[in-house]
Length: 407
Image (cartoon, rainbow, N blue to C red):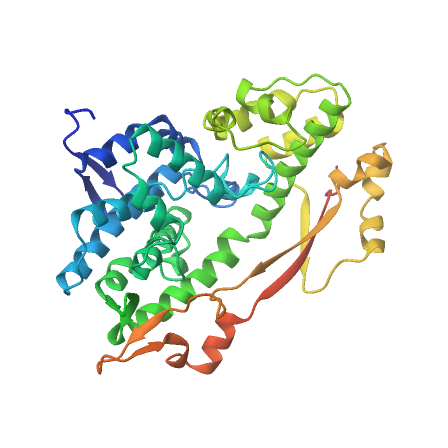
């Protein structure tokens, strides 16, 4: 390890100074795999809706480490035994939990490597780094996979009240300016405890948990599932569908080497170290460079879709509670027909889909509360029935995208 790495102090706009002095964690931050997160947008194309939302996965990961440090300190102060090795592993697990995200985070999750989640890619990167650091990440990997015998370790990294959510809600609220999503993560952490190896919230933290769950619900509707963001991300996916189709037809496309590597591997890809090395070279700049280049391509479908993103001249989007009929889709193609677009290209400009929001999943491991008597209870029993029903009701909505007038 580099002996000159003693401490990093990051000046974070959310928490102030974030101090990291563990030499292994500092080494991990220095790796190209982690530095790539500086070039991965935290909230996809949400900056087309909220101009301030240009923060990255790098910001988020460091914020998570800070909150994990606070969580460990709070639990230790309440008599929970966490040794230095476990503390390091918890911080590494949360530091690297999003290292497998591709360009624009969730927006292109399955467009680059189909059918493989970012969690799977994160785990693969962690194994590669573990080999490089001679097995130093073994415990962190076990926690990341949810396999620790100390259940609350797994819950701190991934649960319905985890460090990941405590950071991204507060951070995304700050950068988007959506005040309804702001939570008091420090207050929630101060209320954490452990009962029977399970993470619990103390009884006096009930209203803070209610605020947290409501904030998450608001953020999904106002930011993560904002209709303009949905339209933009759908267009982004269509751009790469078109690019792959053109390549199959023998057309030549210019893009960075890393992006072309995956565009040319359309029939499935294995997570070999070579493929992971290529993936580690991909970030938002590859996608923007391709979109800028392809905006002048002779294929009018590809060029038009790219211009939509570059100029924010997006397709119109309508949302409702029930599916759109095929007749409705057909009526929306009139502009395309009038503009002379081939019928085979219409699905790139007129398409429908669904999205859903579930603030709290009662089928997953619940959030537990510890009463003053020491009894551990499911938080569902402490919430007002109407409030709990609203949180656990899965809302599914349907959308259709189509060209505007003047197309």
